[in-house]
Length: 116
Image (cartoon, rainbow, N blue to C red; front, side):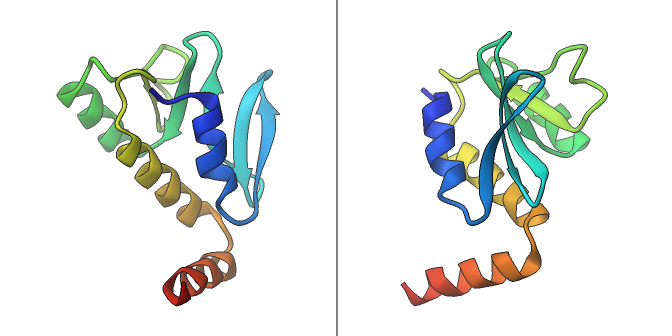
């Protein structure tokens, strides 16, 4: 089961991330760009993914992934916390972070991990 606390631990372990609030709900950013949101209405995470990936996820696993009328126009997918795979969550968060963080930050983080 993915909780907001689980997401918090995963995201805030990445350099230069911060917890903020968007639309009166918790969100996490890097470089002033949102990585992930928590949707209080559905009590679930909202991940940034390309439209094609979102549609594929929903088609392949509608018990886990879904969208709403509000989220449909955006490249985002909602995931049911009791069904979503933690490895998918980690990989998706890291991918989004890598795309939005400063290149120097990503390079330094990769170098530190390679040396560990």
